[in-house]
Length: 261
Image (cartoon, rainbow, N blue to C red):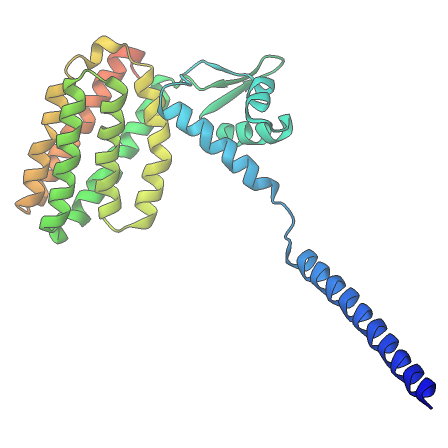
């Protein structure tokens, strides 16, 4: 009798052990399946965007300047990525007009002609005038103080003779005008234009920017006009500012062609 009871207990334990093994195996299988289901395909566009972002930073920092050759193989090796990924990023830059491709020679950072500069500065003038029209009537002490802080930083950098740093802060100030207008399309259009403004300015001889401090300090006048709510005067300041800069550009790279006969 004891032997029969012991045998029954033994068989029950075996069944329990088998059940637990099956359950543990099922749990592992389910966890693995949930993991597989949660994984998303790697988006190759993400890699293109990262390469693009790094190339844009190199343009803004002056590491890539107009006319410079973009060596696809070297960039791919440096980043540890495929040449196809780098090629896609360069193609995006070409679509934005920042790169030109030459048959059998490769891709180069664009050298903008006088006609290109004329389009860039005429559009910049329209955008920034519109930004001032929207910004000044609803500006606040916080807005004005923020703009003033950028100008103070710009002046300090200009005094150090840092041309690229001055340009970065100059464009940051003008981008803030567009951002503070609260017009998203205006701001988006301006930021796209800013990259071409970088290229135009890098084409200028450095001696044309010998007056960095006075150019930086002049922005205090616009800040005070915004503080005082003088929309018309602020618009006139922006128009004069952009026109003066465009004239300096044309003196360096040539006069844009006139339309018509």
